[in-house]
Amino acid sequence: MSLHIERSNPASGRPVLVLLHGWGLHSGVWEPLLPALQQHFDTVLIDLPGLGRSEALLEPVTVQALAIAVLQQVPERAIWLGWSLGGLVAAEVARQAPERVCALVTVASNPCFVAHKDWPCGMAPETFDGFANSLASDPARTLASFALLQSRGAAAREILRRLKVLLAGQAPADLAGTLQLLAQDGRATLAALSQPALHILGGEDQLVPATLAEPLQRLQPGAWLRCYEDAGHLPFYSHQARFVEDLVAFAGAAS
Image (cartoon, rainbow, N blue to C red):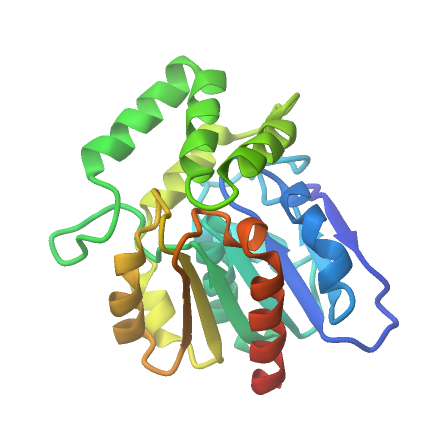
């Protein structure tokens, strides 16, 4: 299986930062941040299997299988940062190969995106099923609606414009299969990790509620937690300077 991967200069001696994107998009979502990030890190950008420019998995599509696939592309020790769906995959990478993950960062990511009786801070199961059905019947319209949800909060118009550009002309190999990854429950994975962790949330996020902060703190009592009050689902767009500052401070403390 072929994965699309882009690396900055690996000989700089800076810490390695692996960036994993969310569902429906690709690693191009990180492009506006790269000039700032690459002052502090060597970056590794990967299109997740079945999304962007990467081939789909031939085996059953699970978070565990995606983690194995991306680990094969990053042999060195690194900080792993996952946004939304990417947060589930990054956490699973940290579980499978703790010696390769020196720190974990999740951004607007829920370890259990679909609500359960003991986890109310997720999407209602019927809402998730309705979204999956909508994707099957009209993928383009569903992705457009999804982009609108992601762009709520500060800088909404500019974020929506960027998302439309990222989505234009896309033909991901496995939108439906990768969507089902969001129904997996990764709470036990996150709770079992020993690496330093930073979780960043948006106070106006329509997909991952800010009320997740307290349950996350219970799962990982030692984790750093940041909530950008007026940010939506892409806090690294609306609050880029603060995001990079928090990331650099965390990386320094975790080293």
